[in-house]
Image: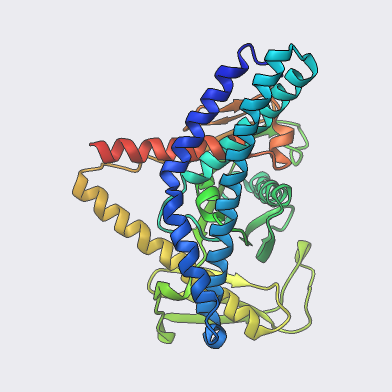
Amino acid sequence: MAYPDPAEAIAQLQTTLSSIETVLDLPRLGTEVAALEEQAAAPDLWSDPEAAQKVTSRLSSVQGLIRRMTTLRQRLDDLSVMLELAQDEGDAETLAEVNTEIESLTKAVGDQEVLTLLSGEYDAREALVTVRAEAGGVDAADWAEMLMRMYLRWCERHGYPTEVYDTSYAEEAGIKSATFAVKAPYAYGTLSVEQGTHRLVRISPFDNQGRRQTSFAGVEVVPVVEQTDHIEIPEDEIRVDVYRSSGPGGQGVNTTDSAVRLTHLPTGIVVSCQNERSQLQNRATAMNVLQAKLLERRRQEEQARMDALKGDSGGSWGNQMRSYVLHPYQMVKDLRTEVEVGNPEPVLDGDLDVFIEAGIRWRKQQQNLEASH
């Protein structure tokens, strides 16, 4: 891409990068790294593996952030010098290189700016994502499976490890629900903007008269619990059921009753895990999922109390958040941010960044608006 005024484009990048540096407070991060390095060097560090893991993970995360910011700053400074040389010598080839680097840096600085907007209490955590079929019968179950694949493909594109904990298959096609973990820093902050109801309009492949069908699937995103969260669940508040794992069409996957379903009696929350071979492992994983859902419930209750104090009548999110239309025309449109694309295929194959980034910016705007009232 050729920029009409490369100097202006570089100046804009300088302004954006400087504001990111200010928000991140790089001197404070440098001090934090020094303190974490001291803790990591302690001879008794691994006597408490949980605490050690936290220290080393945070150290690696902050060091990575400082390294990324230093690299961006260096590239931007080099770019200004390159532009100056190209203009002084009238060098078209170097000018073309400048344009390429401006494009690349615009993307890299934009990505970093979006990450900087993730400053919520749990935003830096890994995520647990649950996709559920809602209204629409067999089409909704098929749509839920399409959505799950979309998110798993998005994770794959970004190199984020995932682990599917439980899949409840529908009888004819698709899934009733599925829960999977996204094991990457900031997965919760990033994916939490995907929470809500996703609507699909298409010619139903399950209707022998080829009629158009609208179906719905819900996405729930919760942060993974950490040792410090203190979610106590008394044993008498949980009902434990064990059963055999099953695959599509009711096929048995296991010959033993290793799958575990936990029901939290006071709230009615039900979670299952069937991906491990051992009943004990499945129970431990299901307990982690239950704790995560109870933590999110507690967070939502606290938010509701705050909203009531502020006189907030109803959530700013709304339930239905995105429409995917495959017939009679093709379009994916986010109902909050108004972001729209005309080709649903890449989106359904995990090309979600434009929607996620717009969602994060939109959420930040909403928070700023609420804070100013």
